[in-house]
Length: 189
Image (cartoon, rainbow, N blue to C red; front, side):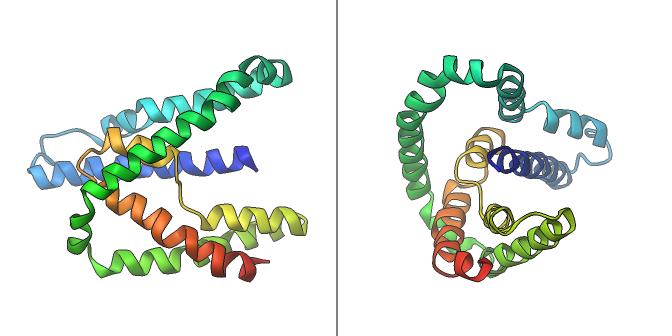
């Protein structure tokens, strides 16, 4: 399920970069003379954060248990401290752009409240089609209903600097996370 979570984030990252690039082109009036869809796809698939996410999964798979033991000081011990600093920094960035939320369309809030249940329902159907057990089904539903708290914010911060951290961190940690903890998980179970 940890690999499923990382694999679920990858298409979201690619789609976000593709949509942002298309929006940039249409807003700048370069659509007719600008990048082709193949150039946009190339840029989206070769983004540094995307390569790092997929590459680390491949290295972890190929190196197996032996690689896990060798990398444990970096991937487990050091990761926790770095994650704390990263989340603190993202929180500071989100706080700096907090005023931006007043300009956000109300539809964004509706999406943040409705999407987790839609995504969990899709995961339920997929789990039933694949014959997953109860535990795996609930876990996949929770993963599908969740927002990315680490990988996507890190990529968005660098690939799409015009997107305000208050929006994506506020939506994921301020709406989706508490919604899933208080209502979602009991409903999915």
